[in-house]
Image 1 (cartoon, rainbow, N blue to C red):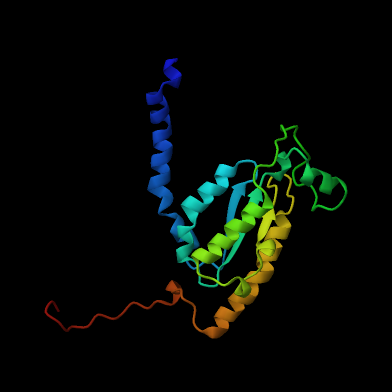
Image 2: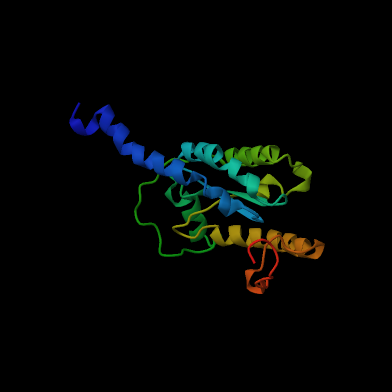
Length: 197
């Protein structure tokens, strides 16, 4: 075995990456805090990405709003062997190509099926103790996209926008926001009372 491939070298090369992940993983909850919608994205060509999504990010949903929407998004369909995204765009069924067509990337067989995303969505509902009849159906909240070609990206955001706006309007009608407006903060006047006046 060459020195470049020894187990100790591999351990050291992966160490900083995993340390970085552990160090900054806690920051993720800040991004979900008070969220009306969370987009959880995995790679349709790598099953491990869906497993890691569940392992690393399911707990982060604890800080989201109780009526938060969850979208499960399989990305990189432009790399699929069957060319689903490419063929639909050519037939005029897709949203069009953003940034050009296929760059000749090697096509790979699909590794994560839509049913896997639906199962993960249902696992989130169970984890959040939500009843399936009170939330959007899994089929509405699971998408397959290509950030490279733009396939289904607009559909994803338009769908979420159409669902989130009524939720936000309902929250505003129910009471004051759970945020603080620091621009309206007034500095309290000092009084001459107490032991140190």
